[in-house]
Amino acid sequence: MRPLNRAVAAIPPSGIRRFFDLAAARPDVISLGIGEPDFVTPWRIREAAIYAVEQGHTTYTANSGIPELRRLIARYCDARDGVTYNPDNEIVVTAGVSEALDLALRAITEQGDEVILFEPCYVSYGPCVTIAGGVPVAVSTQAEEGFAIAPDRVRAAITSRTKAILLCSPGNPTGAVQPGPILKQLVDIAVEHDLYVISDEIYSRLVYGVPHTCVAGIPGARERTILLNGLSKSMAMTGWRVGYACAPEPITSLMLKIHQYTTLCAPHVSQMAAIEALRNGEAETEKMVAAYDVRRRYLSSALTDAGLPCPAPDGAFYVFPSIEPTGLRSDEFAERLLEEAGVAVVPGSVFGPSGEGHVRCSYAAPFPALEQAVRRIRQFTRQLADRRSDRRRQGIAVANRGGSCTPVAELSGKGRSATCE
Image 1 (cartoon, rainbow, N blue to C red):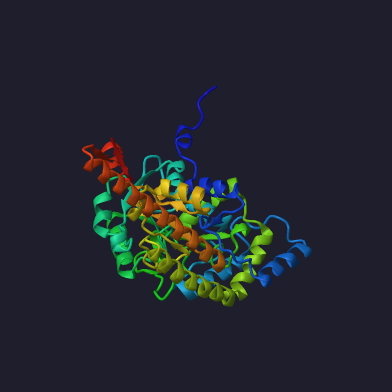
Image 2 (cartoon, helix red, strand yellow):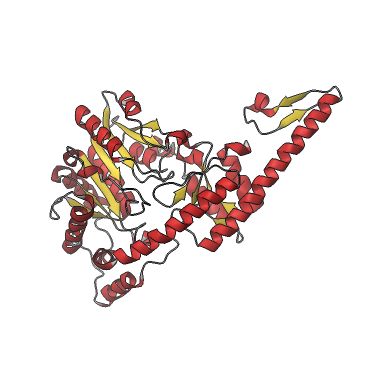
């Protein structure tokens, strides 16, 4: 047989999905792994969808989406983001933001183009760049800097083949909200080097006490920015698959071509539900954000008390605690926590090398489940500490008897225990 697509074959499967599948196989697991609201879609939105079905709204729609929905998206962007789009030709309704990202990358990327992204980052970014024919170029962000983007590192990563900058604020997995002045510097860099900017702002409504800056609203950004957003996180509508992309018409016209020949349109019923969400859903969003804020503060404090340093993030619904005090790699920590304590988290390494030393925990889970998860994590970290103490004592005892004790760090680079003879 002739070979299949080598680039796609080389892409690893999602590390998030792997841990989700492992957790699903055990009935006693508390999952903090998947970034999905635990809230049910608000009733009035579900009721609008039921009514839409009863009225026979089960057909295809316009490729770019129902005109009324596009008008509401334009109104939302103008009111909340401070940027104006023409609903007739600058907005495309997509099957979730995942499709919007794919369309954006395929519309602007040619074979070999480089796209800068910021690690730790959502697991889809690099593979989607590769599938579009591009080359992902990772720029690291650091925990000690609050995972803020460093513009000087961006400048150092730019080459003659750089085509775009892909960013997400608030971020997944870190919850970091990029400050307005940093985003302004990124826009200046994009203008200087004539780069596109893809801004994934799916978590823009989930911020806590800090402002969200819409990249497209920064002077000089609109003409080169593709704004991605949707209703999955803010309206608890993950399964409805409604997202959107906003950009100048030359960009959206190309995105629409791909959309026409692949997905055709977002689900009709879901678009009708989205209309109701944008009309009357803000109060429900505010309730969810308030609940997330309580969970955010609890979980970050509780994990820190459990020995996993965890500053409270400013956005999204994730915390990204350090697991370095345990001496374990992030994948080993996650696997053992699942096996020994029945708590599912996502190892930071799946979000890129910059995520190593951390795990992602979603607090989009009921508060009682968070409390139970913390109790299990606390017991797990205590057991790890006790085992390390036992091994140290054993090593000292062997040394006092004239033996030798070689740290595993010297043997394997993993730095977890000691091998004594």
